[in-house]
Length: 297
Image 1: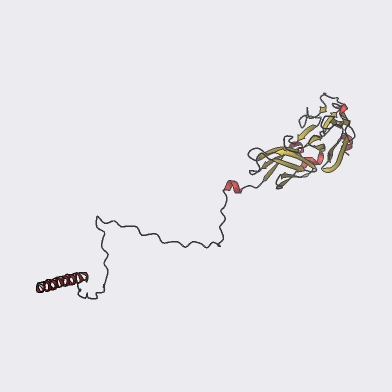
Image 2 (image 1 turned 90 degrees about the vertical axis):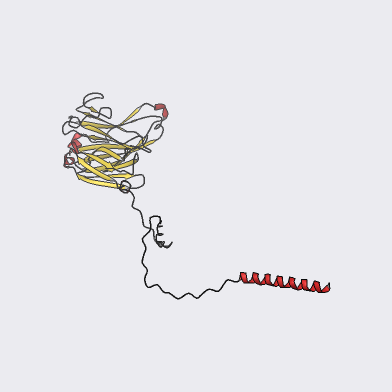
């Protein structure tokens, strides 16, 4: 019995050993024959077959500029870049000058027009354009436009008629209002020889004419009236100031400007207004402007 058990154990060990050897043998790859070292002598490209898909090669990367490299300025569009102010002056009869201002970057904006002591405010159109008729006070007329940002543009023109014309102007600021009234050949108020802002007359009418300057709708308006004397006849010029709620009980300030054959004389004008009980009254200032004979000397 013991002999039979030993034989069975031996058979079992042999079977286990054969199984293990088979397992190990199976886990080791079979030896391979050495491949010959073949170097390609040439490479022949093959045409793509009908079913082959050629994928595009990725584009080569472009080197990025360093962060510290300067940036190139981009030019603004032409309509924005042309922001300069252009002034054109055109001479007219009776020593008048038509001023054209083109300021595309100053639309609907307050602008101060200066000439020979005159300083009045105007307003550009929504397109930045302005047309103004200005009485030339000098033979060599220089006219300047000043905008709110400090930008200044000016132009000059020769006005030969200014050498034989006399003009008188009064200018003021905001509510300090003055008015010129001129009377030719002893005319009275409302008669044909009476010239005022209500009836300014036209150039060449024989009784002189009045030019009203300035736009009162802008902030801090600067306004003026300029009277041009007739070439013949005797004329009396007075300056009037109405007592209003805005002017009563205080001093009114202004300036007068006389142009005689292109020579300019500027004088300050100060007027103490009555108290507010006199509202509606009109103060008449004489001897501020010369009559025709004195102006012609």
